[in-house]
Each structure stands twice: as structure tokens, then as C-alpha cells.
Amino acid sequence: MNQNDAYRRALDVLREGGVVALPTDTVYGLVAVATDDAAVQGVLDIKQRPAGQPLPLFVASLDQAALIAVLTPPARALAARFWPGALTIVLRRRPEFRTPAAAGDSVGVRVPADPVLRELAAQLGPLTGTSANRSGQPEARTAAEVRAQLGDDVDLIVDAPLPAGGVPSTVADCTDQGTVRVLREGAVRRDELARALAGIAELA
Image (cartoon, rainbow, N blue to C red; front, side, top):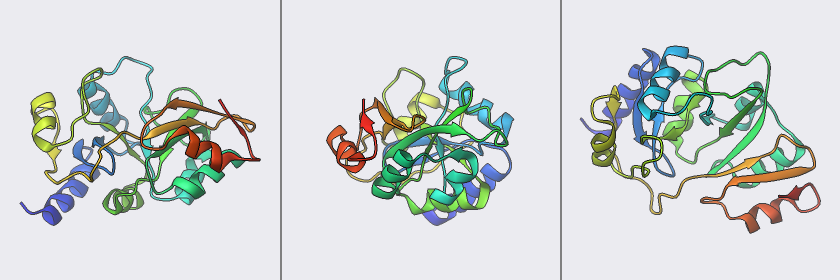
């Protein structure tokens, strides 16, 4: 199966409520439609993630993010600088958007640099965007590494190369109007965040 066929198959599997492992712009990810409760539960089961731990979401655009979460001025500043890209922004979830991937009233969202992922999110709605590995295990950077960790638990593994680097996204909490907290430093450095937030919010 060539890559184009694999991505078309991925679209079908996701639409049918399945879970797909595919390369993102950072590491291999586990993708499911975020509003499909059974599919999201499948991702949680595959990862063996403890109850209550949220999953980040891929969205197609800033406009799609605004439909599911409240974009604060710091969030808009970071999105303008780093989206599409390797920055996950934690925001207040809009009450009308419900997904078992979220924890409480917040949700982590990211517009990925990978155009295929953005197209999938544009067609299907927000997608889970968590790394394709068991909780506590190393991130997978090849289809073989995904298969070694997850075996047949995933409905489809797309075998395609990752971009150079393969560093997980940085996670920044922008739920507060005046202070942005870095929850995980990854592909985007703290100093880059600080420059983007100058005059807008403090970086904690």
C-alpha cells in the first residue's frame, strides 16, 4: 500500500470509529475522532493511560480551535507565531464541545504542521493527538516501533517517515489571561515562547 492509499484508508478507518497510528510533525501519534466516545476510549485503553489524564487534540486551524475552546490573548499570540507547528496550547473548553479526551473544563489543542493531519481534522473534526506508545514508554518514531509496543491493538498503522528531529510538542497552559505556564518543554523553547508573549503575558 503506497502512502496516498494508506492515508485514504486512514480516513475510512477514522470515520468508522477506529484508531490509527501515523507519523505526525513530531513523533508517531494515535489518532481518533475526538467526539467519538468509543474511539477515544480505544486510544486510552491502547495507551493504558490512567483515568483522568487528558489527551491533546489536533485541529485543522485556529478557527476550528475557536469552536471548541476559548482563545485568550496569550493563546492567540502563540498560535500566530507557532501554528501550524509543535506547540500544544491548553485552553478553557467550550461547554458545548464534549469529548472524553478532555479533563474537566480544559483541553489541549494543536494545529500540526503536517498537512495530511490538518486535512483529516478538517474533514472529521478535532482528532486525538497523543503519542503512539504505552504510557511511560518511549515515543515511537517508526511504524516498527509502534508495532513493537502496541502490536495489533491499533486498527491501522501508516508506515511513513517522520520529519527530521522527531521532538514532542511543547505544552503551554494559556487558560489564564495574564500568565502562561509551560507544562512541557519540547520542540518550541521557553525563550521562543517568552519572545512571542512579550508585552502580552508573563511566562511561568
